[in-house]
Length: 66
Image 1 (spheres, one colour):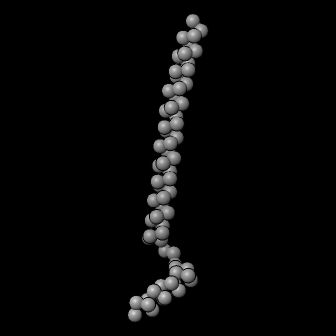
Image 2 (tube, rainbow, N blue to C red; image 1 turned 180 degrees about the vertical axis):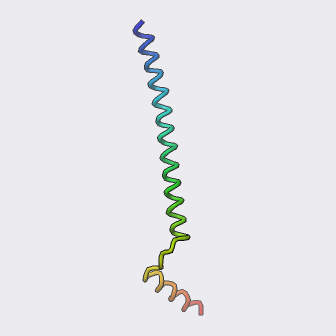
């Protein structure tokens, strides 16, 4: 009777491991998605001032358009 118990245990371990891997993968995607969303909205709607390079690039662009 040892074989059926071992086989059943192996089956349970395989099923649980597969489910655990799917849960971890799903949560990793959610965390990455939330982080990406936050970075995007901070970049678009944040109150950050342009750095000197951006200010100079904007001036060059405006002078070429005039």
